[in-house]
Length: 169
Image (cartoon, helix red, strand yellow):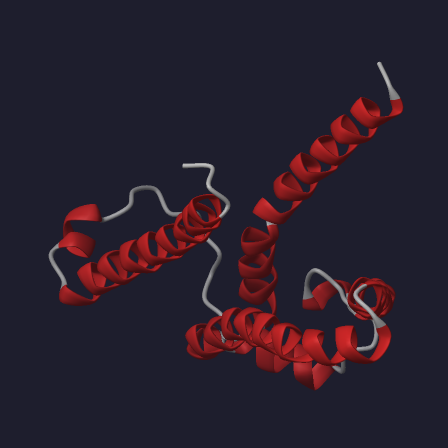
């Protein structure tokens, strides 16, 4: 096995590991927010967090051409990698998984969080009939389907158009 094959396998292994770790990010965000946010504010906080992910992508795409033009293409990787590293250290030093574990949280803040929370009893059965009988449930299903359909059509279209342009089809 040559060095090129070794590098190829290392990159593929790294991408798979990254994908597996990224797959639990949504679950972890939901869990942290369920511990920290009062029930009345849950949907607003989830919307803010999930929209923040898209805002980060748009911001990154907006700044990347400037960085490439001024400092060359490696600057994009160095700048976003540096920002990510700083964020990880700040997160690890400040974040706690629940208000009970946070030593810097004031007693009044803990009371506010827990007074507006409901009991964390596990759900025994999911009311699928009730969910599927309501228009908001169908709106979520249809919008999620359309979002995924559009995303993957655009991803495949970009590859198809590149292959067609290069004469590979």
